Every structure is written in C-alpha cells, then in structure tokens.
Image (tube, rainbow, N blue to C red):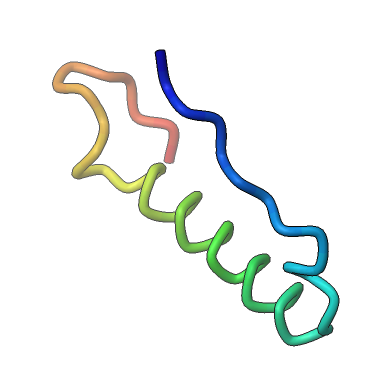
Length: 46
C-alpha cells in the first residue's frame, strides 16, 4: 500500500511558498496536457 503524503503544518505560511506552489501546479498541468503525453490515437483537443 502506498504511503500517504506528509504535509507539514506551516508549509505554505509564506506568500512566496503559495506562489511557487501555484506555479508548480500550472507547470504540471501544462506538461500533462502536452501532446507528447497524449496516448497515441487520442482525439485532438486543440
């Protein structure tokens, strides 16, 4: 069974931490939506 993620209580206490986390999420979304990661034969969404 997978180990649950460990979340520290004050991980996002500084505004720069929140900004960096949002930027990382945007990067992950962009990479996950990239054509290179689409299954072959998938319909084009763009």
